[in-house]
Every structure is written in structure tokens, then in C-alpha cells.
Length: 315
Image (tube, rainbow, N blue to C red):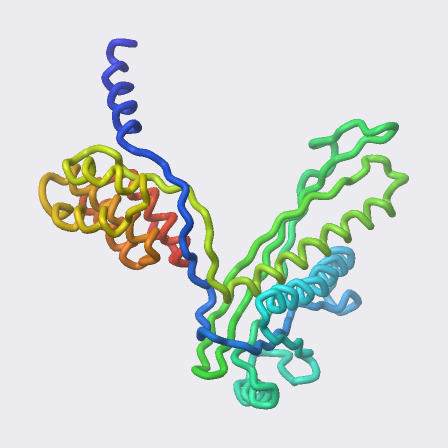
């Protein structure tokens, strides 16, 4: 059995040794399709619900979600202020947009306050896990558990210049807070949970506003060190981050030779395009490596590129 497995293990070790990882900074474009150079933004939400309204079966959940909603506005505002953007909140009831939207109303508000676009903070969905004895610890005379709070918010954008609507982008945030397993500490647990919802709501609102800004992020990317003469000659250039010089060498040979060689060179070209800010080209080269050359490393890389571009990967 060991003898039969040895060639497989050797091939896996060889394949792994052909690649390397590098920490690189890349420009991540904004997830929201907004015009560059915007200065003034309006924010409104549709998430507040009446705890005493008809059909409400769990007032505690609605009340905590409302807490998150209130804090989400603060988070959205602070994100904009952090980027020196003027921002104003608009009350949904007062502008008559309780159901649907009306461009006449939005345009009127936009003209009055010289706005560039609106952000709509949509519904918040939350789920708590980890109660009971799961993760419990002994603290003094009481037993505690860490309760996890998972939240997401739907966000939409309304561009006043083009009347373009970008609907239902999603932001997520998770929180943890302590819960006592002592039934006499129910009020303390309720306060702890409310504070968790407050933190979650703030972060959801902050992340919602951040969708309109590009960011520089640091990622760990895999590339091939060996596999062809071109890859061998560009290895040191890549290590020294001389991207353009490495690209000039690969572009001459990446369409030649067998599929295995081409797949590795195309993946390296995709990597070089991403680190230079050419995400569309990076996706194109990664697709050719993954699908035309059956390169498994490229398939994993392609999913990461598609996620960065906000593209839903093909199943």
C-alpha cells in the first residue's frame, strides 16, 4: 500500500513545490456602482418595525432589531464623515415613500440638497447561536456561555444622475457577547444581548457606506515558481515585485506549448494583472487557465477574483 501511494505523494509534493505564496496589496474597487468624485449623499432606511404592530409574534426580536437599525444609521454616517462626505438622513414616513420608491420625490430631495445619490439601508436579518452549555466556562460562582450573533443587511443605491438602481447588496457582521446560565441574571443577559445588537447594527451601517469607496487590501496570492523557461526567468522579477517586466516576458510565450505549461503561465499572468489593478484582465487570464488548460490552482484563484469583482461564480 505504501509503495502504491508513494508516486501520488511525490507528485503532490512536486506540484506544491512548484508554487509559492506572496502577500501583496491590491486595489479593490467599490462594490457600489457610483460616480467618482461624489460629495453629498442621502441615507434612508426601511428597517424599523413597530413592536406593537399586527402580526408581531416575537416583540423581543423586533425590539432588538430596531436597536440595530438605530445604530446602523450612526455607522453609515460615521463612514461618510470619515471620508469627508456630507451626509443627511431622510425619514421615510415624512417623504411619503413607505412602499416602493418614487423618482420624483428622490429628484426633488436631490435638487434641494444637491445630492449625488441615496443609500437605502434595507432589512436586517439576525440569528443568535451558542446558548445553553455550549462554550460555557466557570467564572467565579457563575457559569457563562458566549452567544454568537450573526447579522446581515440588504443595501440599495439610487443614482440621481442616471436613475440607476443597484439593489440588495449584502453586508454581514458577527458579534459575540456573554450570557449567564444563571436564571436569576435574566436582566443582565438582556442588556448584554441589546449591546450586542447595538454593535452589530453600527458595523452593518458602517460597512454599508463603505461599499461606495475603493479600498487597498492585503491578500495572500499563489503563483507558479517553476514550469517553463518563461516562469523560471520571471521568478526573480516577481519576487522583486517588478510586475511590468515579468508581464513583458510572459506575454510572448503564454499561448504556446502544451496545456500544462500554458495553464501555469496564464495563471501567473492573471496574478500580474491583479497586482497592477487590472481585475478584468486578471479574470480573463484565470478563466483561460482554469477552463482551457484545466488548471486546478487557477480555478481556486478565479473564485477569489470573481468575489473581488462582485461576480457570482458559475457553479
